Image 1 (cartoon, rainbow, N blue to C red):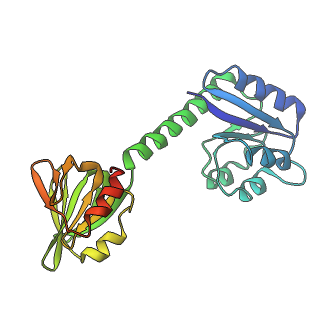
Image 2: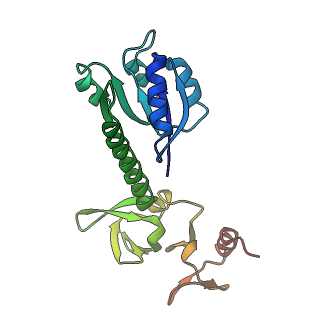
Length: 231
């Protein structure tokens, strides 16, 4: 995998040195190198950038002001000749802080850190998925909606049935329905909401999820048919 990078430094010599290090690294792809923050910002409005190698002392707009103007911030590796900015740099959640002149082994260690952070964040995004929080037995539980099989009215409660277990939640069906994706969940009966991805078969009276038959209201069958996109 490669991280898309930009280099921002007003020194043409330093830009050339850093750009060469980036081009020689197997995990980096140089999107562009820029002498000022305005050009870099323009590039980042068009291209996806994962990592910025950023000088701090630049004319007109310095490195910190540049970051303050970004709506979404990639990872930042500050590159400067002065150590005095280090504390402030890490207030910006910097991945690393490199002092000029840059040693190759120090550069490589910094890039490895950036790659590890990138992989960790992406893995967590995949693991996270869409989820809701429910309160059951005085505990707040995180439930991934992809694992919900159905929700069932249970007196003053609703029962949330997942692939692993089921939990009673003090709530109404109407309130619970609002928190779920209308593309994935369908109210098929006054007492049942089902995850259409879990439906194995259905007829005019029931939708089957595993060995469980979920009753279909006469006026709700059409909603299920549309959701499943079948004739």
